[in-house]
Length: 192
Image 1 (spheres, rainbow, N blue to C red):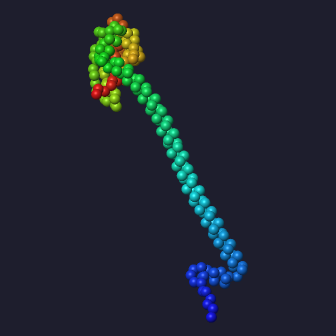
Image 2 (image 1 turned 135 degrees about the vertical axis):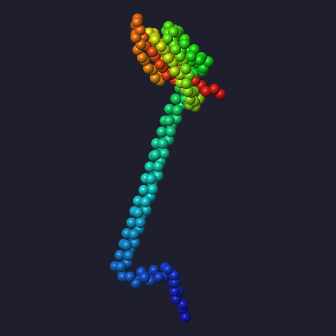
Image 3 (image 1 turned 180 degrees about the horizontal axis):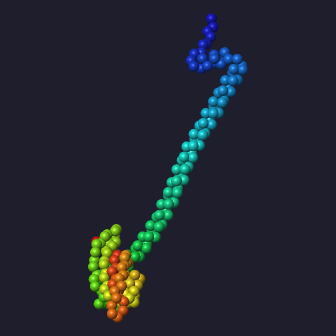
């Protein structure tokens, strides 16, 4: 007696189902399977394309950020070079008191009698630089020497700048004179 091998399992069930289908139904099934494969492939391609675009946009933004960092690095190096050059200027005037410098300017422009006060106000440290504020008062000064004094104060190499100036005209018997109040900011290197 001959034994006929009987197939069992999932593949056997699928084969029996396929044999039971008519040729037309088999063609429809093959078309359906092909459509599912095509749509699955297109969906997978769309998903991968979206992921690739997302990664590409991240790479572009990272490149832009890197280019900006390089540009800022160049600006920083240029600013640091300017700062180092200015440090020498600050060191040059480190031993000269501000009051002596202003008195020298007043003497140069014959305003000794008009110089009423040079007062040091608050100081503030920003990094390696100390910004000290000074108030300078000149009373009853002639206009022309006063303007020359102010011009030289602004244009000298001394690390000071006028933050605010207030003028007041004072009438005297001979001529118009002026009172001047200056708020100066003087830069110096922090000690230590």
